[in-house]
Length: 309
Length: 202
Image (cartoon, rainbow over all chains, first blue to last red; front, side, top):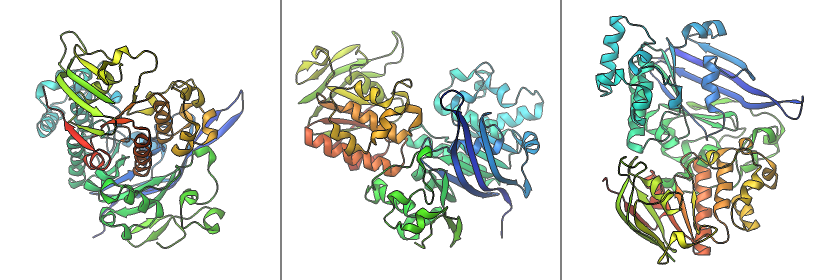
């Protein structure tokens, strides 16, 4: 049975307007072509290296990009276009963000109040108590301020802020850095539970191995492009992966040989036309460098490569 | 050369939590010693002590039998940090960042894949992986004898991680530089280290 499509993003582009010298402006393309679909009850992980602009995707969906950023492309939420007006109504209720940094909490507000957004109705309070129980947080933590919490507790509090509503779409931005593997896995499991309860979960992370343990599908992000969309099982062996970069990632895992390829991800300002991976790809030919490589379906996933691999 | 700690104890505030207590460790130049422990066991603190950024409450840090503090000028024990973007001065161009280190062999740049063009950039104009390459080059000055790697590849993609570790293993072996490696990733530690030391909770 086909599950309900909650979020669909087509050809998202995000650029920044920057001042160079004096009054000269330049446009910095950070996200070039991003395509994501998340269904109800599904957990999709977007994996890309740090600083590659993945967080912008989350901010773009929620309409909280900085003033000098511009977004193009189409975002569909539950079958309808997600306009600015609509997201204003939905965010914090049906669409929630679990932010990356613990600094997103208000330092001057008690935790319990903060999760309930200052509302005092008894139903919210009961729900909060239940959530705290579920995450083995002591009830007295509600009366504490963010600075009194440990890293792991803060994480759980931030997830609680998402749970107090009944979200249909949860966007988690790098929820694991700074946690040791046991805690990181547990954090991922919290999100898995949300998906199992029926929410669509979009997880943005740099940790491929962790994502493989919990997510249903993996989207690989490279130099501003989504280059592959694969189910987690495709990562069991190299042959089922589609894009040469994804295969290189697979081979670079310590348990799969710890191999590497030369070169670095191109810096946004130095991008050449064509496939972003072309300079490092052994399969690269003139066809790859000529023009933009389209995003196309391949088996039960998608790939951005001119060759069938 | 041997880097050694004897009965190291440390806490950040006078009556604060005891981070390290009576911790002893010995590492030789031809070793890459992995340090394994969960969060909050003082792995980063240990690195900061070994690199001379913090002073132990009690205990000694010896390099070839002499206290680390008696080495004047450039510290022969250098540390590479987890977050490269926090380990470089945001107002300096990358070439000036490199000049903060000891004399650095120009060949290192090539081996690390640092493009000459990056030298004129500011840190915000480079990715985490590119910045980390600079931080590694900066720590590998001529007089470096020991290198401390504190979760240096957690924030990087797997390919960059593998590139950087292959380089470090080759370079430190060639120059006889010992390494202390802190990482949560057990599989990575198994790949890169010659032995592993577990820290116990105080």
